[in-house]
Length: 286
Image 1: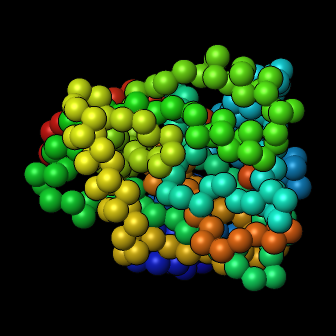
Image 2: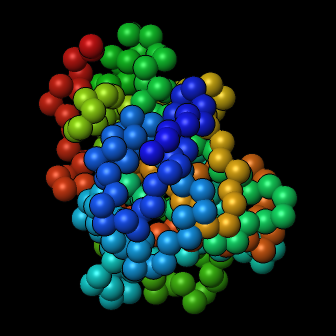
């Protein structure tokens, strides 16, 4: 197995492995996943069942909220399709599904059809974003709790799907109310701290004034936009990306459009232990 770093901040391409192989050195793959936050495999071309089999090695497969409110009792594939009649709505720095109590531990993204031009995805390291802050700012941010909501997600669903999505949106609004998450979280396996930021899902900082909350969120948006925190992946058909969902800020940002492209987002995975609990040492600066 060969590992090639994609950028200085995060990301690595892994070659020389067959993800279908039952004798795959999964410990080495998982270590790379922890070390690099997002790992890439060119031309994986996994089937649906192979996605599920690989996903189960990373954790318990989750049921996406949309699928759950429509009656799903088992994990399903989620397909994201961007095109002229369905433009990309995820073009901002975010972490997936932060508006639930236990956001996914990881996600597998598989490219089915790439556009002729553009369609790259950018990721940013939430770990590096925290580490590059001064100790004083680290301590301040570690003391904060953020309210996450799904209003922007429901708005995007309405824009893409129209009135036919009304029952789904009503069910999600009913079943998934606002949740609170600490702004700084400690990874249970690496022990590293990271910012937990999701533009569009973050509503406000608790315990401070609206003006103070706006100031903090503005700072976070500008900070995670620092290119030194980023990596870029230029997709080819069949590529697979595996990313640390709750620890990786900005899981998808497409700076160019997806004309007639399909991005299959397969298997959102939950951790084996709750991931929304505030770490007990969160206010102690290391």
